[in-house]
Length: 267
Length: 288
Image (cartoon, rainbow over the protein chains, first blue to last red):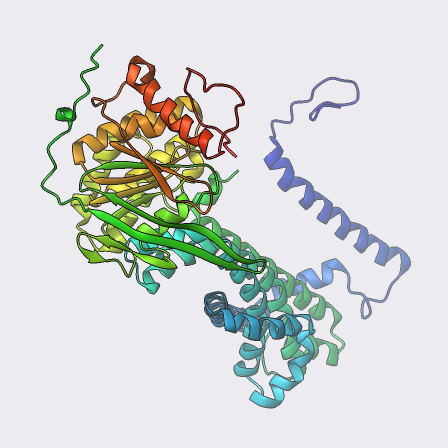
């Protein structure tokens, strides 16, 4: 069956092209799910202190907006800073490892091993070392962001045709010129794919540290809501966390689009 | 049809100095896991100032290695390269290089790829921009300036990479099978364009090829390399007027030159025809 054709074979003109439908359909699905959820709770008489109704926790976005916003921005700030630190360290170390053979032989195996270790479990360690506040969150999240960026940057630096170095040497390029004009932009798409993976890990990392010990942030809010059995606030906080993750993913994707216009033409 | 083969058609050397390059007992051995691989030489050669010299040889004979050594990009295992009386111990920078693959940076537009030379060498932006657009015109690239390499055809990419090798007006141009990845029609056109550009600028050119037609069509001298480990075993002066016609068969001399090269190739076992060398010369193709 052709798209836009109903069973009768008569084409229906929805005046919507595929792009609009792609946006509309998920929204409709979401609304239908929420409605079904709401109705199911009413029908089965599920107590809302166990599972809040969509109408309840969505209302919290309105009534508790300042509080949600405050904690979301606290968590968001950590992620932005951690991305900058973890990303920069990841790219720099990847450059050094790819440039110096001995570093690669020595450090790479260790890094692969460290990458397999589930790093979120080290959250209590960071809280013990750095106390409660911004520092442990930042350290942990940067630590987690660092690995995917490192691994993908290494792939990026390695993907460069060796003969390009012949060209840059014949131009008399310094190591810095080679890095800034050749290696870094060539590795940039890979660096960004590392950053995209990092967005997923980073949000989890901050929240876990906030679970363990903190005085603000969405993780802190979730723990508070558990303490007071405020289920609708907890659901609102979880949803906010997901939206935050989504936001950062979109941010990285749009940055990629702005910074690397040439990718549009790649086939 | 003029067959008055003469060097008088050669333009007078431009004021910009073109370099003289000599190689003495140049040898290269690579150490691999399987043992040592004797890739090149020992061999001697000379490229005079403003001369267009081709090195022709079968695949794997070490001609690309010879070019990299001559450019100072890899050190010879033994022997020396002397450029304008000075022994080469670092990469030549008064040079433009074109490889078989265009090697353009996919994140830069065509013009920005060419102007990479200006940025890295710290040359005057306005002057180099002007030269770049001039080269784009001469190479039939007008309108392609703001396009990314992925938006260009293979032939256009290679033209951009030729522009990149020329924009800073180096005294030496080295090309390693620059037309090897192109189709026959594009190849003929670029060859012609390159010859005209060279006649204007009169640089010292080292041109690596496995195409007999390209070598004769472009060079003042053709150096024929043996099979690996490659040594230059024959030197053939090409005394044909310039610009040479697209259809080289117009010169009876062309067939003679081509036959000499085919003859050498057959003698050293690059070719094994089993019959007499044919009268219709063409691309050496996949000579193994």
